[in-house]
Image 1 (cartoon, rainbow, N blue to C red):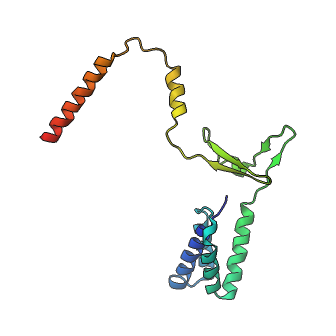
Image 2 (cartoon, rainbow, N blue to C red; image 1 turned 135 degrees about the vertical axis):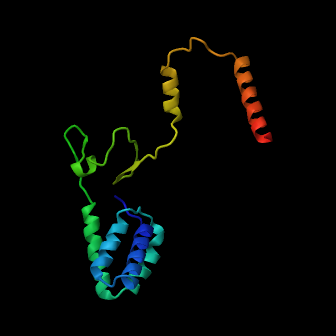
Image 3 (cartoon, rainbow, N blue to C red; image 1 turned 180 degrees about the horizontal axis):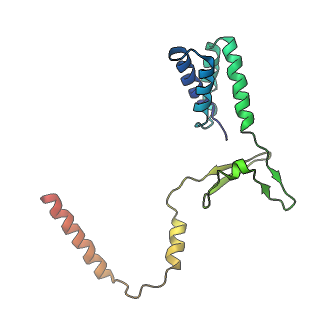
Length: 163
């Protein structure tokens, strides 16, 4: 899991606000912070905001927040081994999050690989494959029949708008 600094700063800000104004209990602050972090993504544009938020906290609170963030980050830093066949051995905690049919784009750099889930959307290639796999229509419509259906629908829509 990658966290954006913007998401991180938003979570810290919300948690600090909660701690200062709702429940002045440091355990609640940390719990709130970690809860908010679990749902966020990473972006480097919020570094300054994060620094300002941390600087506004008492030093003892800063230390506690930093330590809990370290634990949180360690929790999600998982090592994946390559087996003798050159395939990744996916740990169960990651494998349990994978669903059949999900697709991922993989960005590869010199020293890293990032897997990002492809959001569901319309897949033109899948539609083309499905259409191509269908048997031929035994009663295909002519262009004239299609045009007549379109005209009928247009007339119906026009009469609905007029009434």
